[in-house]
Length: 401
Image (cartoon, rainbow, N blue to C red; front, side):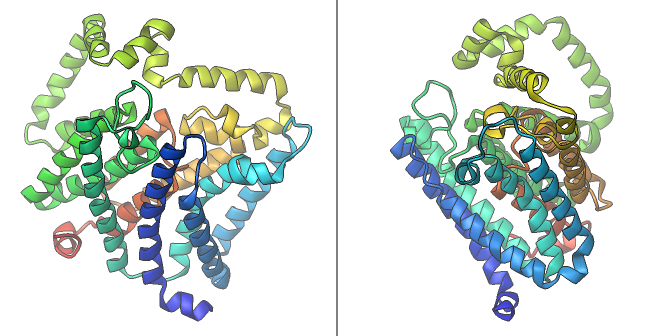
């Protein structure tokens, strides 16, 4: 069996990447049509691929002892955190399907994937095709977004059956959709800077336009940081922008009330939040309230051991600030894990890649969901570590036409 897996690993990887998209689409449609009943077809696909990855890792354990030990230590830390929970009974079945075990597995998925890619040789062309699948899936998704926006189709809305603006198309989670759009924007920007091909520039703007229809503030944050990076570091007139940016920032601060009033008038949903709960709740989508609730729980229930190992009902108390979530969930191990994942994306010497990675992680730091969203984080790793090259001009010709 192991020989069959190794021999066909390229086909297996591409098949599962494709099934990720099909599963996410099926999950989204069924969830929105059936209301509260959530059919996690995508979860079944990801779990099956995870089993295959683990088999490959175990078959090559001698070559990756340090990573495997790290994984086992994380599992041990998680087990301790669960023992420290202030609960009367531990429902394993519930925790596996939708509770702490479910979320822990989602967090560990990228670690397992990184270990998997280090345990077996996968062709460069396979990784490139995985990106092509993503880009073409988003082209199809754009059609759904356009139809949703034109005809107000609830099935394609980011927040169905509400008055909040946003269209995520075929994707169930607008947050995950945001990260997928970030990946293709980064890809095309990187190769536009490297090759100066107008095709990449046009595609980048195409995806930027439709990413704005998601109705996600994290997308606005990403695009703001992304634009700042370009104008200050890579624009032909970067010296002018370096002088002008502080001036513009100063003017925005002076006239902040007028700018804020103009902004919230354009978005009635956010205006309601601003009037009812204030600026911080509007900007953070109530994450400030979630943080206060988590802190209150910690103050009432945590012991010394919790500050080391974490321990919280993650579904109930997650804040959706990536770094904070990992700490309250896994304690010190969660902080170290966050650092490990970040370093895994920053190993190369290419400055542009490092800057683009930092922008995505800064966005995630303020809005959460990157490491937790399996499809997004796996494809982000593939693109950053396996598809984008220092010698871009040479390799780009073989990636996508």
